[in-house]
Amino acid sequence: QTIDKTSPLVSNTCPVCHAPLRAGERAAICPTCKTPHHADCWVYNGNRCSILNCDTQATVIGATSAPA
Image (cartoon, rainbow, N blue to C red; front, side):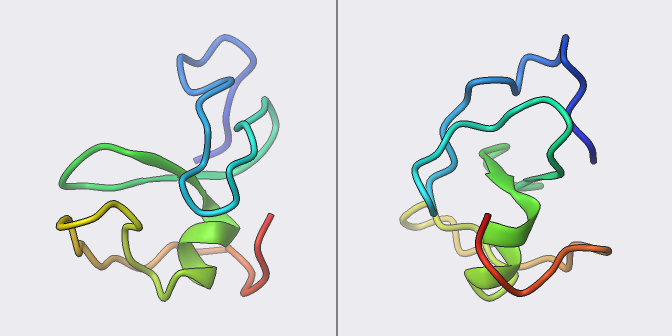
């Protein structure tokens, strides 16, 4: 999903690259623990959540293989 400027995701920190999520960027939300990641970081992390003990795996459509 693309982050809207009014989204509560704005300014959350991506657990992969440690940069804030910003309006206009694509985000991947873990379906299990609900942790937001940059979509590209999710893919970079092997299409899985980076939160310890979560280990959820899901494909993000339209993301690239490089970190944000």
